[in-house]
Length: 581
Ligand code: ADP
Ligand code: TZD
Ligand code: MG
Image 1: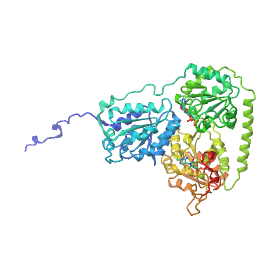
Image 2: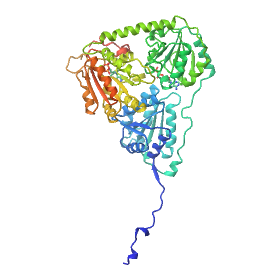
Image 3: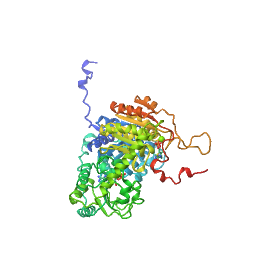
């Protein structure tokens, strides 16, 4: 054979130029970037593992968790703090269901988030043929979320993402479910065709301006008030209307009472803060202005101690909220910034308030605060520690670090912490909120730290911590500046429950009074502390916050510290003391 017959690379014909191709996963990651999503929380596996890799490659931070519920709590907290939907990524079936609990909780709390879940191939799910992780996820999600969509074709992904985003933040924010099928994730498109799908959506969260009539009616009612009060809810924290609220309070001199997660929207310690006067406001106010707060169980649904003649002004974005429990005399439906601006402009410069009203509330505040301080002082040296002595040790440290975000869950641990720690800044308190659920702790810590870059302190009951404790490892893996403080009183409410059968099984409320939670922190390389005195606790928390590194403080309390159900024992069908068997 002549050497000229040998094919060299030069003589091999060039391969035909096939167009570059992309998958549905790539389109999804780009669509998320297009609406400004820069972080995703989740837990991967079939069929979304590669999606997470691609998202990371495209500049979306992927925060990987140990349990989807906690990833969802992080996404919800991210949404609440930033006003942009937090994104949760889950696998099909149980991963989806684990995450859905957080998406449902977000919906109840009006936090914007999007749960994106991979789902299996449709046909065998619909015919119940037993496919891998087969579950009719879309229909299961629907009743628990604000909106639910499924995307089946890669061409539809950018539209689906924009729709999910708008649904999460427009009107009343909430949880949105986006189901993405496995074939859609894996579908291949020509890159040129895919490029044409992307667009920049206009005005993703439009203002909703209240009607002038509604504003006039509300302003007239407020102007007629003798004993007015403002109740600030977490809707106001979310809507970032602290400046407008300050102007309203400065202009009118109306005192304010914050709901739990609205603490700090205006300072708890401000001269017009009526934080200690909840009952007086309920019993005596003639006009109450609800600003992003629902008249739900947390406000006795407008009944109970409320004066029979009180008139409500309600500022809310959701028209369906109005009259939900009691008649609302002056509804103002709109976004809070627009509504407050309009209301401030419509109010007279001076109100004719009863001259004894505000000084009376201020005197009451002084008296109640003094009593509270006396209680803390009386407990200061209690050994073993109680909730109060522990909180007395924590209070000055948190006061010295006002920009630290507080995460808080438990029963007594929740109620006593809320009562003890004053908040000076908006959106610095995240708790178990409207549903009073346990299991938001570690996820919320991660979401708060990632979304804001700020330091976080969680104060957790020992039971509450158990719901999310494994995701302390996520705090450690991402080296977040989070300190977790565990109040160990050995149980749900306390550790002195008695097994009514008299057997060796623990009582239903009993956990582990001798547990060393700090050793869990050791397993993941955190700074850890085990403290038994208030002085040790003050020192440990000071050092832990200053370290800006993951830290865990196990606070040993007395087993008898804490009462059943904390402040809401009245909601039990029958008090434990009255139960006989
Ligand atoms: P809290 O538990 O603090 O009392 P809720 O969660 O019960 O607060 O109420 C929050 C309310 O705020 C909801 O009714 C919600 O519709 C409303 N809301 C949320 N965002 C806005 C907004 N941007 N403008 C007006 N209202 C809002
Ligand atoms: N499960 C879920 C998901 N949410 C709940 N709220 C409960 C159970 C019931 N529950 C409460 O309402 S508070 C609480 C539970 C289990 C824990 C209280 O114990 P703790 O706090 O250790 O967290 P204290 O300080 O001991 O009261
Ligand atoms: Mg406990």
